[in-house]
Image 1 (tube, helix red, strand yellow):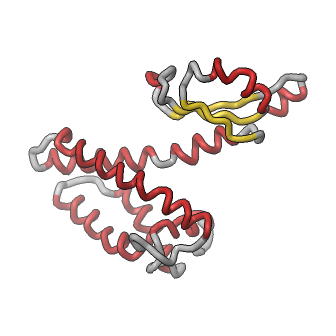
Image 2 (cartoon, one colour; image 1 turned 30 degrees about the vertical axis):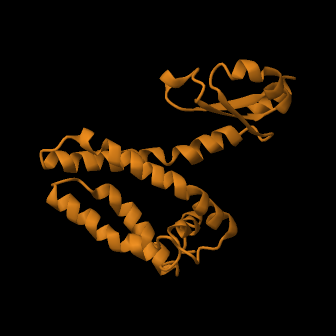
Amino acid sequence: MAAWADGQGARYLDGAIKNVPSAVGAESTLLYYSGDRSVFDEFTPTLRVMGGDTVYLGADPDLSALYEMAVGGTLLPALVGFFQGAAALQARGLEAASMVRFSVKWFEMVNSILPVFAQEIDSGDYSDPASSVNLFLAGSAHDEELGKEANLDAEWHKGFHDLLRRAVDAGHGEHSISALTEVLRTPDRAA
């Protein structure tokens, strides 16, 4: 699209909204933009009407789409994890609402550790783990036990467990869990 617009003599700015439709226009709504910087600079006040957290990522027009997918990749696994927890609680006669406060605290912990993981990934140094790949792999047995105990379909965990095993096979067992990035980067072979 950017090449077509350029060929027509137009300027091109791409964008992505990182929130639900009902949040469009809110001060906290995040929007990514990439492409022609002059368009972004000229129309920033108008763009901020759609969301107050408006970010220019760079001149490559596909950066907003890349960040949309890169960040968006965390949503479904997190939600399915929450849904599985809700199903497990309901299997015991408890309400899903009873775990919301605890899930929010858990997400806050995840939020706090992301900068550490990002630094490990960017440096390629996974040698000082807060939680190792082996620890997560040992915990995978608990996922299976919960599935059996609560009569849940826990098949969605298998891909994660396979990823953990591949990381151990590649020598990352005692490394930080962020070393999974190395295995994800090379799906055809162990890293």
